Image 1 (cartoon, rainbow, N blue to C red):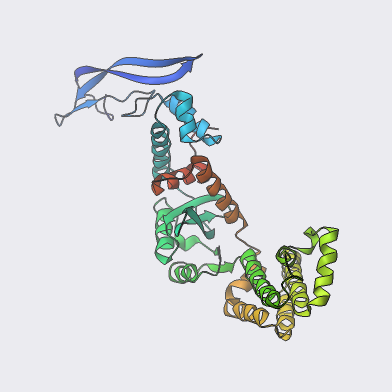
Image 2 (image 1 turned 45 degrees about the horizontal axis):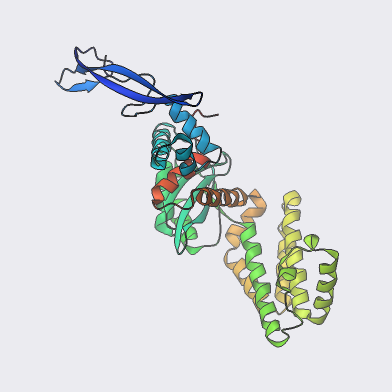
Length: 360
């Protein structure tokens, strides 16, 4: 039988498949597999239940390769373990991931995150879309511009999801990311600017103030950058004592630091109250400081207010996406980089795509 059709046997072909090891010995299955003649006159090899069509490995062997890769072994390490070319392990993973992506549909994605990650040194990036509810990667594309986000959305929709179901999207304040959200996800989805990206921008403002002061007072502020950027709760007693002295000696820096700590407290409190009023009060206080880098930060808040106020409504952030970014860099480190970016993308889906590959 071939694809549900009864066909006469044309001949038999001797095939071999590598199987799981028997103790320390390599094991192979050998079989004479029928070739049948279809109604159209084509001669086709009958599929066997223990292997994928065209594969020279049994399914159990391939699943063992997937398990080893899933546990953190690189393709090279798996190749050494089984004494074969590491590219074979990569092809096995790629084939199973590709099949899963083509056959396993995504459920509706309601809460999306958009982030970028480097794929190698230089300006080489991947755009990563994550489902914040399902905790998995749902779209990957080359680049980090507006076109890249659009391609990642197409990647997501090709698997059955619909951008029209997205209700919130967390992102940083990249112009390209904002533009693509306005083009493809509004008005049904609300943009939420990532809290940690805001903190990063405020830290940059404080560092600007520190560098300006350090030009005049180099020795006094030497090796102090860490003190100004670290949260007060994470400083040692000795570090806190030095910081207190520096705040008195440099009032602008001291005031900027206090504003930074208060900004963090406002967002921490929002987890319980969801009130915008404390942030509005902070903005008035920050503007009244008269410190130019802090005022520029306040202007940025005003320009992006539509995506900042939604944080207090949804309390959503890109924390999961940042975690995914770290895991992607670990995938790259284990493999010592990927020459072919599409192999890298398949490995990201393998590790972080929530695919059912029947290896657990």
